[in-house]
Amino acid sequence: MDILQDQDAAARRATLRTILRHFRKRSGLRSAEMAKLMGKGLRTYQRWESGYYGVQVEPIRRFAEIVHVDPWGIIFAVEFGSVDFAIDTSGNNAASLLLVALRRLHRRPGGKALRELDPRSLLLTYARGFDLLIKRAEEYAADLEQWMFDEDLGGGDDDPEDGKR
Image (tube, rainbow, N blue to C red; front, side, top):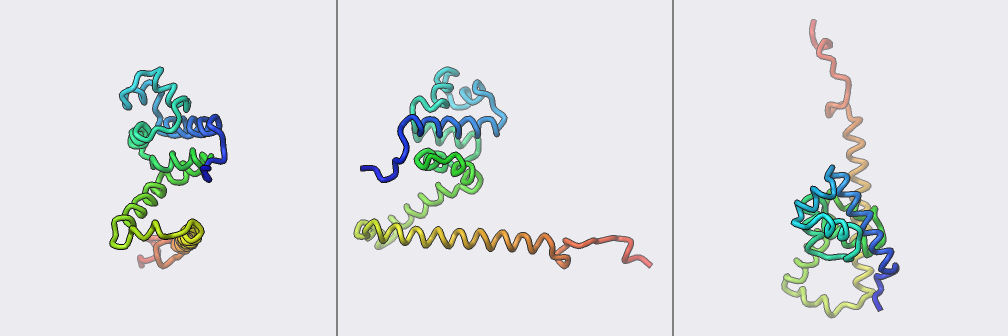
């Protein structure tokens, strides 16, 4: 049983289609232009963008490279059934960085201990890490807001005439 699949194949294709069209249009490209950039015929590209072929890693990587988004954000978003996840990770590569972190763990001495951990321990540990990420995002937003309104940091009214006598 796949614990991740909570939607059927048609819903997954619909999510993929929405994501691909969103990013292509956001990039200002027409289907014909994207097809050419991806090295596909127009009809083949249109079928692919429609989700007809499902999730295919290599074409998604190429597409993501062209439109400058996170390819794994697209793949995870289809699995989650969340277009927003693809959009949220498109600028910071959060999904790809998660895979980088897992790869680094696997390559570290003792990284093979991962196989010894039970699913509950893994989930709790991941959840703690994600809680820390949420906290950091909140701190970052608060720091940014403080900076925007801090007059000592250039946010105040600097009238060049005030300093002249």
